Image 1 (tube, one colour):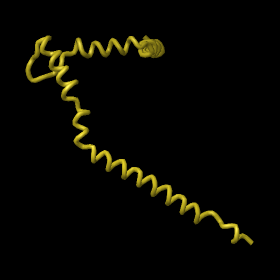
Image 2 (tube, helix red, strand yellow; image 1 turned 180 degrees about the horizontal axis):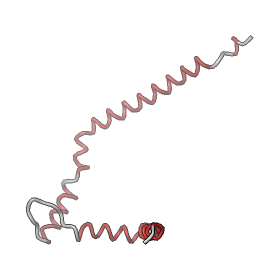
Image 3 (cartoon, rainbow, N blue to C red; image 1 turned 45 degrees about the vertical axis):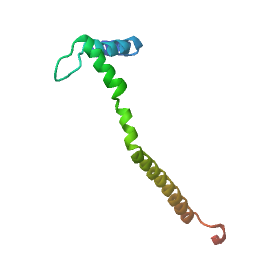
Image 4 (cartoon, one colour; image 1 turned 180 degrees about the vertical axis):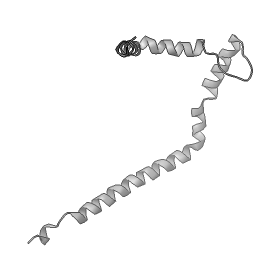
Length: 101
């Protein structure tokens, strides 16, 4: 097989949405979840539901909301400082109309 044919095949596969759906389904059905002990099929679905619905990482982000607010305030302060500094720097670099002879 030459490189052009392989490239064409990969382009053809990845341009089809069904390919990504198939990969997603295979990820849940074929690859079993890794755990320290084995789970039966009925237990596996309850474990997945428990992790995704009740113990999602997004629920823990509420505990660190103050850190997010602090980072946003610092980012806004940085943007304001750059805007003020650039305006002041440009004001110093541009000649005033009265100084031209």
